[in-house]
Image (cartoon, rainbow, N blue to C red; front, side):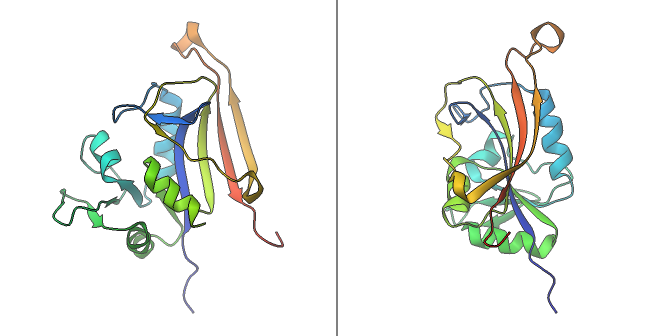
Length: 178
């Protein structure tokens, strides 16, 4: 009997206006989100689009097999796995980890995972502030997802210079009969 396929989780921070990036970088600095991202993804395959991969320095994240999705047939990077479609990337990731596979963006990769119902879970950091952006997290169909966990954080400008509220949220896909 084959083991069950890995859970496919999307992981992203987004502003209230759904912004996730501008000019290939994050529009904010939120250390708590970076710490959570690392804790959740460590040891699991990470799927990134090529532009997102370039935005993090063009190198794999330590402790996470990195799969880069690109249309460029000749593209390579040291210590990465190259895929030319999201489905190919997911298959390669499942070969590495039967527990959980993370999709870390960008916008087009997130859209593909959501539009074709590939994703099982969303790990979102929602920042209660609008930021300018040129890339955005896609709208999600509220009927297809249920909030299963939330942790709110107040603004703490005097302590650690975080001038906005944010929350960590987990959404699981609402399955028929569940």
